[in-house]
Structure formats: structure tokens, C-alpha cells
Image (tube, rainbow, N blue to C red; front, side, top):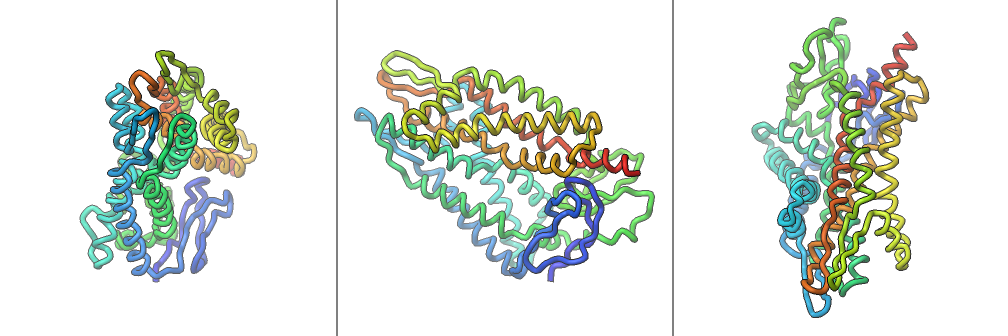
Length: 420
């Protein structure tokens, strides 16, 4: 039976606590901020590995099919056009939007491919009782890249694109549309079914946590942010030299220069937020006349053409989400900087919200890219991605990086100093 860690520091509030009981199928939450500390599933270790491996292999096959076949086909004025996901990335590259092309490639092709091939590299040998070389380091990369895999956002973008394109031409769903839907479900099942702590113990059984009595009072205890192993840091020493013995990630008692890095990224995102909303994200040229669509005009177009549910979705994802995320990040930065003791638990929940909602702003980027790659009818209608989309893509990336740079444990540090 899997042995779970008895002592852990919460990754959100930093509280050192002991897990006295682990349920057969469930989760243990932090007693102070309600963060999930450990999750456990009823399924046995061997069956869990075999089950997850089957899901990974199936997902890889679906990923290949999804990138080989077209997503949708369009018929307009005697012209037939089809677009694959890789074709959309190629379109951006050929139109000198390399940064946006790189973002679309990483979030829709690169990250899922690395995620699935990394899991296959680990799980296939483990299923036959063999640990592959550098398995902990590979799994560390898989966990990092998972944050940038946005297939569920891509699927929503495809659905919005189908609705908008149906007003311009005849849209025929292709095989990749259905395989993308299945792929999204399979990856969600993989993330839900994989017992992360159990896998870490298989990959590196010699690095198990011990009770706090085995550590002396001259060290600080903190969990590796990647694999959650309880590690030690000696106060006064250079923290950049400390590495996790299990996954080799750098260990810090607190994220280095968290406030400085987060503030710089939030300010940069705020600067890019202005052109992202004022400049056109899509330019439509019809019969020699060009017209630019901003994010808000695209929402208004959907609302006035009878697609109110999709208009609401696009409004929330492209306007509300980045705005709310910037506001929350400013609140967190200001309250931590001035050492406010105001509602630390609620502020921690706000931080988790920024991590959850950030990726959904990519919907508009996927919509603009897919429509531009499909509608290229010379002399009749041409759709191009506008410069506003580049600025908006920068906002999405910068806000995600800002949330990753912020250390929520700083919220609770002020409370602990008051109580001392």
C-alpha cells in the first residue's frame, strides 16, 4: 500500500502540519487556508499505472489524428478551404507573427505533445517494473508544461469559430474536430486519475519524507513546489544552491524576488492591455474594403446576430477574465507590500482564482487564428489577424507568469509576525 507523507508544509500558506489519516479515496486539505495537500485514489498502484498508460497511448493517437486531419472545412463562393491546427500556426509564421505563432503552437500542440510523450516515457517502463533514466526530471517537466496545455480552451475557440464562420460560408466539421473533443476528455481523465504522490514514490523511493523530529532546529522546512517533497534549507545560506533531492528543482523557502517579479509582469500586462482592447484583433477585407474588429466589437457582433450565449462566453473570457485577473493581482501585491492582515484566507482564494481563470483568455486568440487561416479568398474576402491579437496574447502570457511568480505564502507571513 502507498505510504503517504505524514508532515507537509502547505504550498499556499506555508503552515507546517501533520497528516494523521489519509482517506482511501479522497483529499486532505489545509486546516488554515483549505488548500488541497494530498489526494488519494482507491485504485491499486499497479492498476492505476496500467489504467493511466492506456489513457496516455489513446490520447497520443488522438493527438496525431487531430493534427493530421483538418479541423473544419469551409465552402464559400465556389471555394473550398480546410485548416489543420498546424496550418494555423504556419499561417501566423508566414504573416510575420512569430511570437503569436509560438504561443498558439506551445499551448495547442507542443505542451500536450510533451505532456503525453513524457508520461509515456515514464509509465511504459514503470508498468513493467523498470524505472527509466532521469524519470523524476522528466516528470518534473511534464508537471510544469501541463499549465500551458490549453486544449479545453482551444475546443471552445473552435466552437466559437464555427458559429462565426457559419454566417460567412458553409461550415463542415471534419474528423479533427471530434478527435480534439475526445482528446480533451482523455487528458482530463489522465490528470484526474493519475496518483501523483504514488508515482513520485515509485520513481524515487529513496527520497521519502520523515517526521519533523528527524530534523534539527537549525534548518527551515519547506516543500518542493514541484514534487511536494519535504526538504530542508539552512538559514543564511544561498537558497539558489538548494535543490530537491527527488526532482532536482530549485528549492526556496519563499519564491525569490516574488513581489518584484510579479509587479513588473503585472505592469507590463497592464501596458499591453490598452492596445489589446483598442487595436483590431482581426481585420476583414471584403471587395477591397477593410474593416477591423476589436475584442468588444466581436462580442457585439455575436450578440446582435442571435448568438447571445457565445457572446457572453467570449465577453467573460476575453474582457472579464483578464480585467479581473489584473485587479486581483494588484490587490494581492498592494496588501502584501503594506503588510495588511485583511482576510488572508479570502485573498488566498483570490490567488487560486487567478491560476484557474488565466488560460481561458486564449479563446479569442484561437478564434482569430482559425478564422484567418480559413478565409483567404483572393478578390472576395480575406481575414487577417490584427496587431491587437499580439498584444492580447502578451497580456495572457504576462498575467499567467505574474500569477506563477507571486508567492501566496507572503500573505500569511504577515499574520504570523503579528501573532508572534
